[in-house]
Length: 127
Image (cartoon, rainbow, N blue to C red; front, side):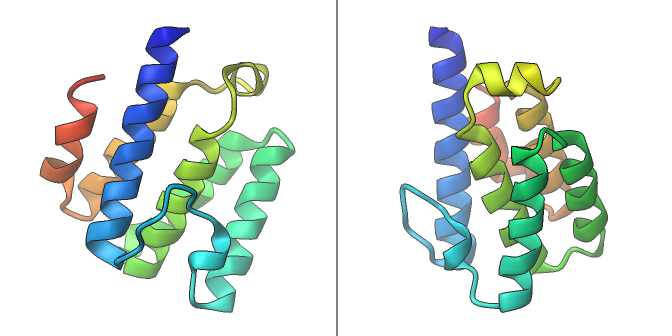
C-alpha cells in the first residue's frame, strides 16, 4: 500500500514537472481544460471515457498511435491522460487489468519517443 502511494506520488510529480517545463502549466490537478485546442480536449475526453469504462489498454494504444508523430500537442494530451489514469485507485486499476507499473512503463515509452528519457529517469529510476 505505501509502496503504491509512493509510486503514485512519483508519477504525479514527474508529470507535473514535464507539464511545467514543456508547456508552462503549473498545477497540482492537470485536467483537460488546460488544453488550448478544442480538438485536443475532445480527444482527451474520449480517452478518459475509455478509461472510465474499463478500456484502459485500448486508450493507451490510442495514445501510442497518436504520439508516433512526435507532435507536442499529442504529448500534452498523453501526459494529461497518464495523470488521470494515475489518479485512479489501485482497486480500479486491478479490476481493469492494469497496474502502476504499466503506467510507469507507458510514460517511459512516451518520453523516450520525444527524447525526454533523461528528464523522466530522474523520477522513474526511484521506482
